[in-house]
Amino acid sequence: MRLNWKGLPFLLAAILWSAQAESQDFKIWEAKIAEYKGWLDSVGARGSRFWLRLDSSRRPHRLYVGDGFYSADHKTKEEFIEIFSHSLAGHPEKFMLIDLFDGDTGKAVGEFGWGGFKLY
Image (cartoon, rainbow, N blue to C red):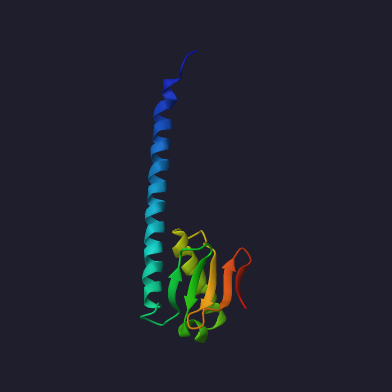
């Protein structure tokens, strides 16, 4: 059996280009998640009080929401939860399941999961 060495440089170039493209994608995703986390910090307990704390000891995560969340319109609430979910997943195109709880009473107020965003 004889190997065709003429195609080897093209194969190596394709592998290196693919690895470089994946590296660039990772940098873009990392920057987007950092942007999400910065925004989430601004609407957290010390900001607009959309969220007060996160309990990551269970799955799905428990997110305790505050006054800012309740005063926002439905679209803003949904966008906030989607961004929070992307941030928890560590990827701008993936989601993490989240249960929503009232920050004052501890009662369940909604969820974000396979069925989308739902308030009770």
